[in-house]
Length: 207
Image: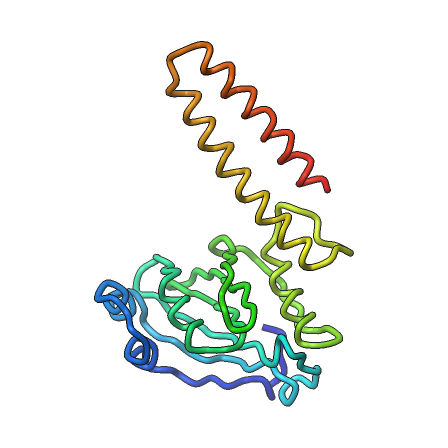
């Protein structure tokens, strides 16, 4: 992480601080205990630590390191942590010598969705910008690979990426349905729908 020493916190947070402060199911509590080795609040990216102005939407960005006992990333664990921290969090998830990154799209303290890197994917995060909101947007853009992000409005990038992901799921579902369909006439109809969605996906990715 290319962050100044002034941003370093390096504070281990007991897992109980998360699963004892909000209602969690027994399974989720067990996930914290059995799957998470250690949670460390590593960096605080804020006006007083990196000298970049906060905004009404983004006052701070936190960086949490999560060490796993097994190579399973639990989105529910991340959501529980996010519920208790009002600021955006960049998660650095590790298992032995492998690394994965994750971050939530957070609006007014509410998580709208998550972005995950591949394991051991090299991402060069840039923590610069005119304000912390732009820094946060830059971080999220690093996770978006399926659509062009350069020079585009952030809201439009997120909307397009959501549509791409939805279309990819629908295409996968249709391909599976066509494979299992026995009746020729139904296959023709399904193939027509599939081709349309593939064309829509192509247009979105080249928007």
